[in-house]
Image 1: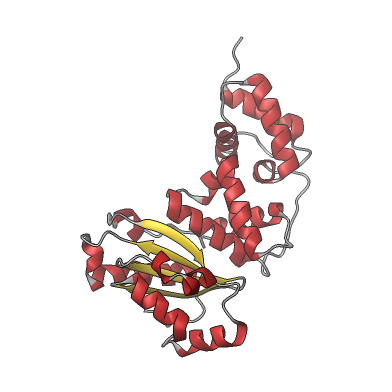
Image 2: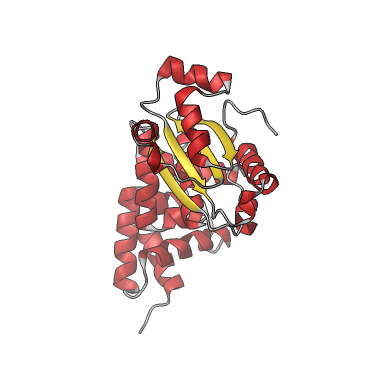
Length: 260
């Protein structure tokens, strides 16, 4: 008899969870591997994403009752920004919530790689848990303007040093640029020409606090994220770009911006 995905997920969770929460079974590497292995035995046609997503939905619906007995709590303050950066970068690229990212093994690997590049000494389980904590605290709320800004966006990411060596990597397009390093987001701005504006910042920024930060620490660990828009879209107008920039500043809280 064929087992439904819901039943397969419930049975697999109860088999492997070891007193841990559904969230932990999704994000803790060893537990998730065991959970997915059990699911494959009972529902071999289900994808890993479908199994993980079904488990989170069962948790949200309280279908499993009270099963958690072993709670792992951490203070994420020292590396929470790494999880925010990874979640937002993948949200920008794929238009996915952090829950969907963490349920998809391939996207989750990308999340781990980005977050670990910022907080190299932190286990991936804690980085993933920090991301869920941000979501629960409503600190990863959707940036709504990205849903309505149909401007043919291309998301690019470079080490700042790459751009100082080859400025041609920066598109001559209108867009938004984000500077970040291992401390978090540094500065977010908008430009009618990303190449002109970003090159100016990297040469000697006219934002004094940002220029001093680059002078004091160098740009070796600085990453530049670019949201490059179609030059014939509404992004050619300053007003729409500033609305996009303003929401990113509000949600991501870069250190050297004055809030608009």
